[in-house]
Image 1 (cartoon, rainbow, N blue to C red):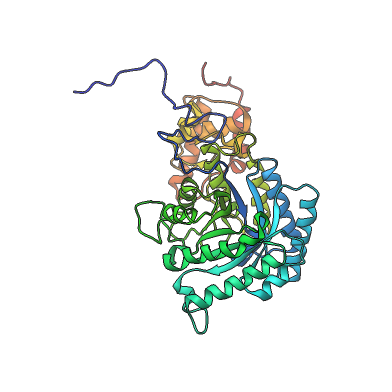
Image 2: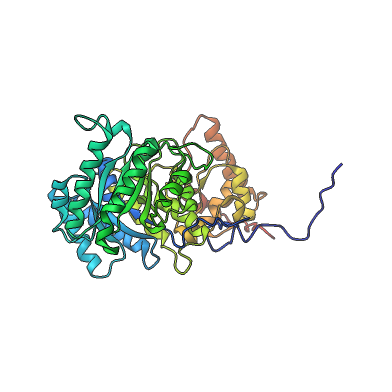
Amino acid sequence: MTRIEDVPTPQLFPDAYPPERFPQFVWTGRPSTLPAQAWTTETTHRDGQQGGLPLTVQQGVRIYELMCAFTGGSGAIRQAEFFVYRAPDREMLEAALERFRGGAPVEPTTWIRASRKDAQLVGALGVRETGMLASASDYHTFYKFTPGGRSQAASTYLDAVQAVLDAGLRPRLHLEDATRAPREFLLPFVQAVLELAAPYGESGRPKFRLCDTMGLGLPYESVAWPRSVPGMVREVRGLGVRSEELEFHPHNDTHLVVANCLSAVMAGCAAINGTLLGKGERTGNAPLEGVLLHLLGMGYCAEQAPDFTQLNALAEVYGEIGQGVPAKYPLYGRDAHRTRAGIHADGLNKFWPMYAPFDVPALLGRPLELSLTKDSGLAGLIFLIKGHTGTELRKDDSRLQALHAQLNEEFGAGRQTAVEWEEIAPRVENLLQVGQPLTVAGE
């Protein structure tokens, strides 16, 4: 029988799981295609609103200010795009531009349909760059235009690109539905845009955004076009598009949004477009806080990390407007760091990293929490009492056992809801005031 040797100290893989940082990538072979820098761009004011986020001007400005506070000097979020068709959207944009000119770290850009009329609209707004919707799949080119077809779509888009270039702006082509687009349209169209912009020099070099509009992309090289996200990135890069000129914009319809983002970066795409806390159409855009957590793990933003504690205020803003994050939403949901299991509470009591992915209070500004249920046991009570009073009781403390028995009676009588600290605090206060000496853990 194979023998497992004991060791004098535990192997906790500190290179991968440093106690003071988010988990790190420990490469067995660092991909040669990784861009020198990687960052994100924001679309809450565009795709977030398009997905049903009801923003007033004041709320939109507050969200922009919070993304700037989150970003700080890290360069984690470099741009944010705004609608321009309604007066309130232009007010949000103007307020953001004023702050950007005053030193705010996130550059405001715009989003338009790829038409000459829309291109003329943004020419005098004070932005340096505009996104342009350019549908790339035959699902769109055959059925969006009358009569439909690839050549008509390309001609319309290229005319709008010319208008944007003539207005002195940098075009950013949003290749909608790219993960269902034929190679025979997408690649020649990218090449045509590059050729059209070439006479305008560096200031007119276009950007391209690969849009996984229906969340159908896959993070694997070995998958055939058009579903391979890294494969598409590689082919577009092969046309001469630089890493910093390429963005990836996915949706989460099939649960692969963050994996696809990371695969895009590893294939050579420098920018990921999404929203903080994942707001957006249907199942939402790429949650930038989740993407950035992993980009930090890759070694990006090494000199200064974004301030993840700022997103607690953003979650509060969304809660106030009836668009709060789900309770179990990763990192920032109400229950994201809450346990109910006694075995987890016991582990947290003994060595908190056992049941925490990283130092949640330090890195996110959120506590490790527990709600008492019939499964929480004495360990759950110990965790809750210590967290709120600083007193750590032992399992054989008779008062603790009496309180646990009372709670078990309630659950045995049919109670289904958890017991939160606010409910139990008076009983704990009485318990700690009982005359007998405390039996403190470790004595």
